[in-house]
Image (cartoon, rainbow, N blue to C red; front, side, top):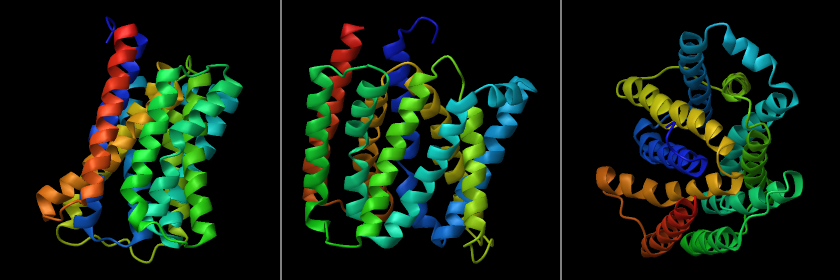
Length: 286
């Protein structure tokens, strides 16, 4: 990693994070666990996993990093927690497609916030990539969009805003490690879920699937995505996350044989080509 440019480091971290996230939908389907039990385990297992890893690597330095992160750390704890909770509650209160389209606005919101607060104006290539990928996301989910609950739709927008604010916060504190703040955020999510959870029981295959999902699709990615904006602008990190919208359904197709729609395939190709082209041009420039 020492021989890589910042652009290469950030792009690699964001890409690897998304690749770990892509089987998430499949694991959720296979686990068949109720929503708040899932939220609890997706908070508490990554919390302990990353906390133990950080303590082994940094020992007491972990707490120093946490307490010296200042207002950036506090903001990240709040936005990280709200984003995780808002996503679940949004899906409970509106159509899933509405939520995902709202979340597809995260790169655009990141670009606006980054330009305003950090004076990092995205170049024309990035604006074009953001526009194309958002239109492709709307195309994929257009037939599934419904005039549902305004409350659920607003929470989906809040989730996108949380992703944007979180990435911009990391970018503004790029000399600090905010992974400890993210660890605390996961604990907050788990505690919040405890007020609504009906059962903590995991049965049969869930005993394997849920911990595997929480480590591979939650713990590892949130560490990587908390580091990535230190090297590349926030909107570029969030652009990579649109790949999960495309690759996730293909995992489901391969394992459960649930074929993705033609719109998903067509829109997915556009998103993948756009992000690949954008990344190539940025890496070439760096």
